[in-house]
Image (cartoon, rainbow, N blue to C red; front, side, top):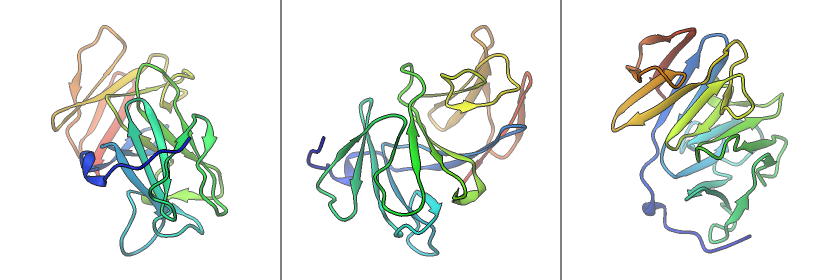
Amino acid sequence: MSANATSPNDSPPTSRWRLWIDGCGGFLLVTGDRWSVGGQSQENQADICVRADWPRRAGTIQRIGGDYFWSDTRAPDQRQLISGNRPLPIPGSATVTMLLPTPLSNTATLALQPPHRFSDHVDGVVLFDAALLVGAQADCHIRCHPMTERAVITRRGEKWLGKIGLSSDFKELPVGNRITLQSLAITLEKA
C-alpha cells in the first residue's frame, strides 16, 4: 500500500526515554507519531539507531491512527503499510521487525535480529502510544517472564505512571529514580 506522505510538522515532536527493567532488560521508549530510523552516526542521529550497515537516515516510521507506515528516504513521498510481525523494508544486513502484540493499544515494539544491536545499549524499541504492557503474556509489549501479572505504564502530561494488575492504583515513575511496583523494579531516564 502506498500513499502520499504528510509533512513532518503534522505530528508532535519525538521524545526519547530509556526504561530499565530489572531481570528483563533495557528499552528505548519514543513518543510522538513519527520517527526517523537509521544507522549509528556521530552527527545527524536518527530517533532510532541500529549498529548496522544502514545509511544515517534509512527512512521514517509514521503512526496514523492505529496503522504504521514506512517511508524510505530514497522515496519520501511514498508510504508503505507496515504489517505486524514483518521486517521493515530496509536494505542491509540488519533485520528489524515490528510487533503489535495487543489490539488494546496502538503501542508497537521493534525487535532486532542478532548479532546487530540498537544504539543506547537497549534490547528493544517501544513506539509508545497511550499504554505499554509489561508481563510474561504474549499480548505484552515487553515480555518479562518472571512476572505473573501485567504491569501497565502510561503517560499523563509530563508524568509517567505505572501499576500492576487491575486493582492497584497508578504510581508516579519519577525520572531517574528506581521504583518498585510489587515485584517489578524499573528505572526511567531521559535518553
